[in-house]
Amino acid sequence: MIAMALMTNPRLLIADEPTTALDVTTQAVILDLMRTIQKKFEMSILFITHDLGVVSEIADEVVVMYLGEVIESGPVEQIFSKPRHPYTRALISAAPNYNGSQESRLPVIPGIVPSLFERPAGCAFSSRCKHVKSELCSIDRPPINLGSTNVRCFLERAGVPEKFEKEEVATTIDKKRISKSLVSIALQVESVSRKFVKRTGLIRRKERIVQAVSEVDLEIREGETVGLVGESGCGKTTLGQTIAGLMDPSNGKIKLSISGQMREISNLPEQARRDVWQQIRFVFQDPFASLNPRMTVFEIVSESLRNGPSRIENRRLRQERVYEVLERVGLDPAQSDRYPHAFSGGQRQRIGIARALAPKPKIVIADEPVSALDVSVQAQILNLFNDLQNDLGLTYLFVSHDLNVVSNISDRVAVMYAGRIVEIAKTNQIYSSPRHPYTAALLAAVLTPEYKPNKSQREPLQGYPPNLANLPPGCSFASRCFFARSNCHHIPPKLECDDNGGWAACHRKNELSLTGLTIVS
Ligand code: SF4
Image (tube, rainbow, N blue to C red; front, side, top):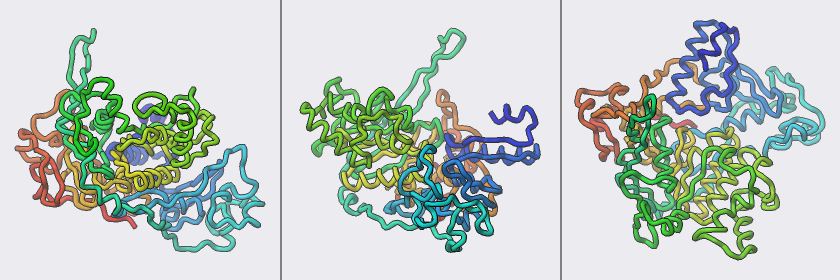
């Protein structure tokens, strides 16, 4: 796509969310490439994105828009170190990043962006602004240059506080209550593999086996959140879907705790299978494509209550359950007769979560549930996941390529590479002191929404993951690993306990001194 855009030697390249769907390492490579071609072709780039970490990495100047108008603009250093507009400040505060704690809530911007057809009379942000002065802000539209900088806010006249500090939100997450139950295992994955047959050749007669997931072992405890991270194609979504029963494992066992006993739930007969899989529910990535546009919200959420083991025969009781679960996820039951297109992205993801919760599951597997949402909506949904776990004691497997998001919600993090878990440990151990070179490479590519004077000093991870239809004999990461020795190319490392209390699949796990992330305050 970038090559096509460069065909005419443009003076200006407009890139619309070019890295949004990419994992951190591919994102780093694309950003590096864009910087190189910008220098070579001496062109300007208009980079459109909702990812503040990417903005702080690539931009020289930043323009912040809200409801169709520019509300602040300036050099990147000024926007991230001394933001002026309340919306810019709230956005930067809402972006998740590694802060060493999984017990804090993200600050959210109340309400939703008004419709362009119902634009407020005064300042476009007035209905959501915590500094609003109604006698001023709700009457006239502020001009862009009230102060010395380009800021569309009346507070510039009064003078907003110069020093910007990220908003703090008092924690309401009582993980201590949950941690008492962290001793009981909710789900056990034993040596699970998942293969696909790929047909190639002119008449598609050649068969190749693609090993998407290889011999994965994983335990998740009751009330725990395990984050599952890795590059695109590493097998994390396939593993999540296999655990959720959306596909069968090719080998291995999946066991669920039922009445205190671990019972195998893979390869069950059809009826028993339907009964048991209601306990594990899936939240899909795309809040637009995952909801049937021809069904009302009520029909979508009540689907699992009309058939199967969670069936509620009585219409009134079924309606009560749907209303209860809609309220629980912050939706108005009075709107349950509407269709999905009438809702915003964040509201649609809430509908997806309500659908998952309706049959009262024990385990929720969420596959990139916030990757399609902008920063402020993302913060609301992450807080909702945390609140639901706190109140209902849910167990989560949270699949994501965004390490900032995963650090906010996970108790432990599992890192996947080429179909295998290569490291698993408590979140703080993984982020501050990784033991696998691949984990360290992922962390090095994480972008945080803060001003960094030395942006171009990052070394993106080179090379590509191996072909899953032809895996190398030794360590799958060896061809990209800076620390590989000859035995790494021949002997596959096992996932074993490291000297930090976690588990890593690397021959050199206890001798390397790898760099993690420093806590962003
Ligand atoms: S086993 Fe060798 S190649 Fe693999 S990650 Fe460790 S050092 Fe690198």
